[in-house]
Amino acid sequence: MILPASEPASITACADAIRAGRLVGLPTETVYGLGADASSDAAVAQIFTVKGRPADHPLIVHVSAQGGGLPAVKHFAAQVPPFAQQLMSAFWPGALTLILPRRPGVGTAAAGGQNSIGLRCPAHPAAQAILRALHDAPAGQEPVWGIAAPSANRFGRVSPTTAAHVDSELGPDLLILDGGPCNLGIESTIIDCTRGAPVLLRPGSISRLQVEQACGQKVLSNEEHLAQHSRGLEAENAPKASGTLESHYAPSATLRLMNAKALQAAVNMLGDVMYAQGSNTKPTIAVYARTPLKKVPLSILLRRMPDDAIATAHQLFAALRGFDDQGVKLIWVETPPDTLEWEGVRDRLQRASAPT
Image (cartoon, rainbow, N blue to C red; front, side, top):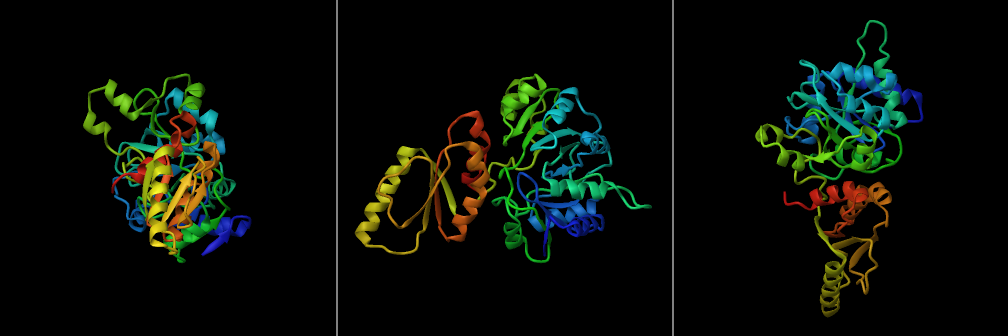
């Protein structure tokens, strides 16, 4: 069932459902999430079941902006390093997730059983409306301090950016709050704050340069950090964050990344084959590219990739879902530029193209 976020009754219905231990599809500025009471291990267990997600793969807990997010953070986190507080002040509400040491006995299932927990304060007004309603509990009830909410799709597949995406994949029995298309279109940047310095676990719309400028510290990638610290490699390689598996965000069609030259050569070769066969069949190959291509046969489904990273991120997952809806078997994507502003989009496409 899809409810409009513009109606106060919809917010109340979703808050009541979460408080009762049920799941809700909810909008954020990044992607739509599949939400449950983060403090209820039984409710969170439903998320893993519905998504087909391994129970040791942690979820992100979304918290209210009340008090700058700090009251909810203190409920879940054992400590908040000063640089993490600086990042909260700079980017919350917003698309930044912080991995913090977890308080014992709190959010165990949401954390995948780990001693750390991922926390984010979303900027979407509908998400914040639900979080406020849950925090301001009726008389005699405990507040719900956070909503555990991974992307509202089957595990490893393309994230949803509209309520219709959620409905088509997870079915009509799920209560879904329709807050419109997601503004950003890719998941949050994730910074690990448990190792004494900020470590980038997943790039997003907030760049590592922005993080460095906000906290005044160098931000290392997970690989860079591990290269500098040989101790505890096995523990540090554990999945400490959502969306960091090698293969993730994958459409049903096989996705391949190519540079512009290789992409044009592949299009030329396919055009020659199609001309020889005289094929007028339904397209089985889609192309998503920034560089204008020459002599693209009608048998290829072509979509122009925007020239800037923000616009590409906004439409990326919707474009991949659209190609799947058209029934293509292959998606050829021009490799994004190797620059910081494209890091989030490049990460999603590299994981989407990785072998499963």
